Length: 386
Image (cartoon, rainbow, N blue to C red):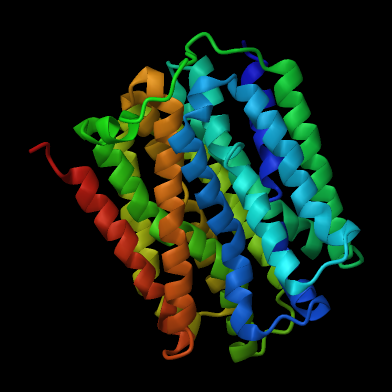
């Protein structure tokens, strides 16, 4: 039993390294495929849109609750890896590149929410800590391509794709071979078309789900625009010694520590209290970001972004835990998946919204609009049952 959680965590880390592989090598892809500046946002959003589509299909079909979760995880890890590496091994145009990133995201839908279901199938007591480690692995996986790109400039963009695809195959294989069916799992024999609507009728499920949606408005847009934020500061302040990829890796990766800390703090202070605190702090970071981006020196800005990178994700495993604990057992996988689907749908809107705003306002003020999400998330968590 003790070895199962580390395997789930490592597998999640390996497989989710595919997520931001494209973002880490975005300048190289844009140059290699002659991508116009106004199409770069579409490339950033392609994985998100694929993930949304995948989670929507998985949720409506009830696949996660009808089949053994570890097998779904394995199959999707292989398919996602193949889609990720396809741009290297096949003749590729800009359109094919977008399709590749979309399909990578589509099959990630069988990895991230399914990984959370696998963990909840094995752990009921201490689920918050377990999902803290799991989401921490997701964060490290998200940051890892930046590590590959930023800490050895000799690595080509093709190497980043080969490395992340190889890790995905390894992670999926580990999950299939070493993780048995969980003692708290259940497999449904038919599709329950009312599972989603019935789930959202439950206040204790609906409240954290809506809070999660507010959290997602900020999170992935912050991650997606972080390299651009750092590069903009670098150009404005002539900080030629700033390594954008290294900063991005460290700031995003710091969130993995925050996920673990948040999981442990929730054992003492309660999940809602810790989640609301994290939302409040990340909201504050959004609102004061123009001051730091305009006046702070490089070390001060790095410390600020490091703190922001921690509080922006610290509440994520707590929302997942609250959703998993309050969802009916028979439809837990479906409800986790549809919650992810809606949450990531909001990231598309948020990313595109900031992309449009970036052309009409000073970019130093751009990130204040991310505060909308945490504010609404706090309101949803504090709202009493009517």
